[in-house]
Length: 144
Image (cartoon, rainbow, N blue to C red):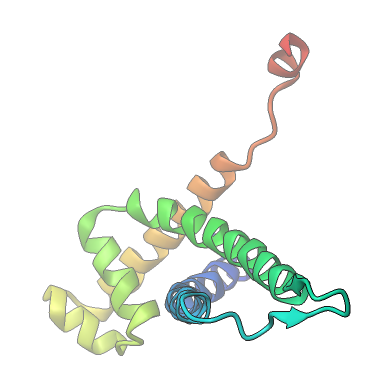
């Protein structure tokens, strides 16, 4: 795996775990904000209630959250296809920021083996992502 591809996957993994946490926090915030009286409801000149700003804000946030959920889901599917020990390695390294020596010790392997496993996991994630986004073949496209 080329160095740039490997680094890109590593950055995606770091962002993935951070985004998962942030999306959960945003969902909780939106849920709390929408469960009480509507702070954006206003009374228009004709006496009717209006919450257009609140509705637009909620819709935009929902759309953004859906996009983030899709991004998270795609990478999570790739991670889920890894062998269990490599999933654990990815979580320890990119979610918990565990030092390499500590991860190697956790698996009772050398640091060299850790690096080999990590590289294999990153390669596998890259391959699965590519398979997920392969354009339909011309034959399949012609059948549509």
